[in-house]
Length: 393
Ligand code: G3P
Ligand code: CA
Image (tube, rainbow, N blue to C red; front, top):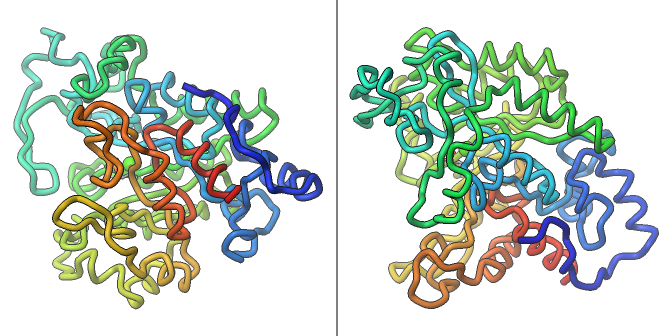
């Protein structure tokens, strides 16, 4: 596992250009900042980077470490985030949900059954329950039923041990981080590295939590202000599958918003609750993208919305989404690239073991060729090498 871009190919980049990049991309990963072969957003797409350290000045393709380095460590732990930063990831992702007493913690789901040792705590056995979250019935333990002090007695563990057995080595090593702890960690790391640490923060189930009296956006905005991450050029993206969450945040802070887009047939849960009939298929049409661009700076579509797969699981021709989104001035950060065969398009699987690595570099190359601005990946080291290869080609 590389922690530097040690295997990078030849540069194709002049020393002068490298110097410019090194100064301009302050705030991106050290292993890549000023590195040969990495272009800024404005250089690749003509977006017009401002040189002020905002998102337009990030390297392109921007590597977003999905839940940290979830390919190598239990997700959403400080260990997972630290490794991502050490690898040189440009941006590190947090998903946030609330506790019973209103603290924001980093978990992909409010159901913590699969990513913590809660089931092994007899004192919490009575908290196991069944709930409907965004129309899906779930049985387990939920963050909103625990105070922060109670959650802090739990330990994080690997979500998919069958696929990522090596990650189970770290089960129990880290607790559930609060978002504030991540901000403090990022501040400290930033001071030590002489640059800002970029984060990509997702509000999870915002309508569901608001109905419980646990609205996410106000405490998030408060924290963003406290840690100076609320400005237009702050090193922070704010993302959600629910457009109304991004709209609400837009009224509270100036950090760039990104609307996540699931499958074409799906409807954002806030649309379902509000009786808005639009689906994701509507949102990726030019008029839908124009509407998103009225309050957000980017979209985070599934990779399938960028390059669909055929019935055989192989990639088809790219859609027009990249072109259409760029026409509205939106950046695209699709999700999620993972190295294992089980997650890769059929064209890039190798051998028959679903848990073995396939040709991830081939898949990255295909996705980068569409002109996307960034990508969420569980394997940021692979993504960084693929990005450098792409910019060298
Ligand atoms: O936020 C981008 C990507 O992480 C969305 O998918 O389900 O992993 O949060 P999910
Ligand atoms: Ca996410």
